[in-house]
Length: 53
Image (cartoon, rainbow, N blue to C red; front, side):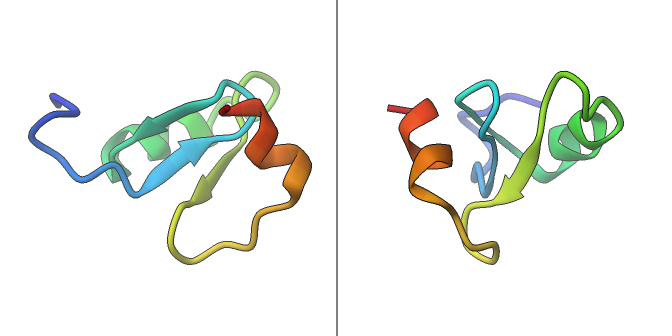
């Protein structure tokens, strides 16, 4: 899905990218590469936020 058409409410804090819910499901299946959290619902540590900046 095109990110521009979706609301990216999920993010991979290991890769520093935002994604839609559909893509977050894929990324959850590869935890050795990408760790995913909800932008709105999950608590974020400062170190996780720094990866995306």
